[in-house]
Image (cartoon, rainbow, N blue to C red):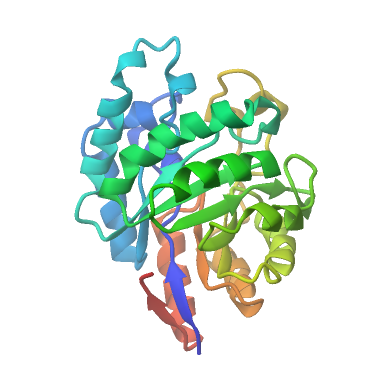
Length: 292
């Protein structure tokens, strides 16, 4: 049987649902500001569900996201708040989200500019986390820049790629997933994330050839709408699937494990109940849930 690392599920959407507030472009960052302690409770619920790696609520803390919000000078303080809420929960993965917006490889700046942006974040995270997870990486250029910045910290780095929902063998940029391998030498693991579980099925077939530990964590959106791809998007432009409860999601993830994945978890709209069911199914299959 296999040792499986179980990631937590989505943080941002879980916070939005629990808070009940109207979503803003700051997404999970806004909820953390408005509802102190709620992030810590979500972390604890994922720990209780069986997760062995906990992703910090830092995905959306970037200077460009803060522009025009009145919180431009709160960058370091927001990281400190997110790291404080995660303290003591277990193995921490410091999340670095994409510059500009999710699913928008066209917004990637020049390589040296991107490396500088990601370096500032990685240097803040590294002293407080066990590994760095570069999330929703949509292009080869994005992968190259964020890996260069994160690897310089000396921490293990996981690279999580977002793939085309209609063809999981391609990145959101349209480039083949396999093209990332040439720039991913610094990655300790390569994952597929924040895409439909069906697309991640296809991505697993490609990642199985990467020569590193691999895995996936899908979202539960019906589709990435055109409204979400504009400037300063809010998550109310997206709709949760009705056919992806804990049982159904666990079925997908167990299929990834059958293809050789050793790191699984959940992304947006995948909550503690999904992770608890997945933990149950992993153990029922005779696998061992471990920490990295």
